[in-house]
Length: 182
Length: 182
DNA sequence: GACTCGTTGTACCAATCGGTACAATCTCCC
DNA sequence: GGGAGATTGTACCGATTGGTACAACGAGTC
Image (cartoon, rainbow over all chains, first blue to last red; front, side, top):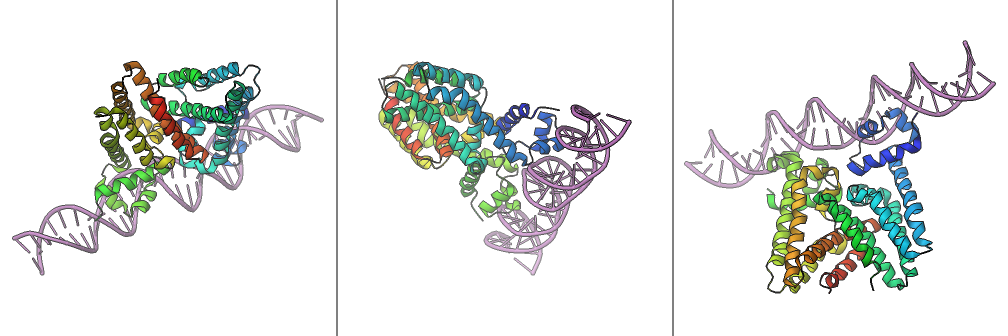
C-alpha cells in the first residue's frame, strides 16, 4: 500500500537515530508499519539494500539542492549563501544528525566506503568551484571547501554531544564570512 | 593474571573501531584474550561498566595531558601549541578516531550523555582560558575554543570518511594560526 | 596437607538478530 | 465473477547477543 519512495525518508530517520547496526528489523517494522514480508518484498537485499537506497536518496537530494547550484552559479556568493541555508534546513538547525557521518564513524563504514567518500568529495569539489568563481585561487578554494565541510560535520557532532544545537547555527553563520574572507 | 589497568586501552580500541553496540562480547574476549568469566569478574556491570571506565580513563588522560596545561599556562601560546601536538599524537595524525565522538553520534549517547558532555565542555573551557590569557575577549575566546574542538572532531570524521588522514594534519596546522589570529 | 581467595574456562540461558518460506490477502483488469 | 500479480502477516530458521552459574584452577598462608 505504502509508496516505496515514501519509505526511504522513514528508513533514513531510523538509520540516523540508531546507526546502521543499531537499526534492527524490529525497529524498522515499527517505524514503517510494514512487516518483514513487505520489507523484503521492496528490498530483497535486506538491510544493506535499504541503507544503500537511503544513502542514494540523500546523495540525490544534496546533488540537486546543494551541489549542482554550487557548480553552476549565476552568482557564486548567492549560491554559497543558499548552500548554508539549505544545510541549516536539512539538518534542522543542528537537531538532526548527518547519516553519512554516522556511517563513516561506525563499523559499517567499510561496506559503504565508496558512497561515503563520494558524498563528501562531491561536496568539497562543488563548493571549491563556487569559491574559485569568487576569485580565490585553486589551492585556497579547495582548502576552504574542506574546512567548511569538516566544520559542518564537527558542529553536528558537538551539537549532539552537548545537547546544544546552537553550536550548529553559530558555525554556519561564521562560515558565511570565513569562506569568503580576504 | 592480566592487569586490570592494562585492559582499558584494549577495550578502548575495540569500542573505537566497532562502536559501543558493535563491540560484542565475542570481539572483546578475542581482543583481550580473556573469557567472559574474567571479564565479568573485573567488570560486574558488564559492557556498560567497561565503556564507562574506558571513557573515564580517556577523560583522565585528556585532563592531565591537555586540559590542565591549558588552564594553567606559564606561556599560553606554548600550551596551545602543546595541545595541538598532543592531539595529533593521540589521534595518530588522523588514523585514530575519537571514541567520545563515536558515542555521541551513536545510539548509546543517552546512556553516556553526562560524560560525553563533560568531556567536550571541559575541553572548550580549558582552551578558552588559555585564549583569554593571550588577550582575547571572553566572547571571542569561547567561540574560538568551540571552533577548535568542533574542527578537530569534524576533521576526524572527514579523514575517516575519505580515507585521507592528511585532512586532520591540515586542520591542526590551520588551527594553529586561526586560534590566535587578530 | 588443608584452607582460603582471586581468577579462569565453559556450559548454559532467554532474547534478539537478520533472513526465509509461504499461505493468505488485496487490487486491478478482463 | 474469476484469474493474475502485487502485497502482506506470520511462523519459523540458525546464529549471535549480553549475561549468569558454577566448577575448576592458581598461588599463598597457616
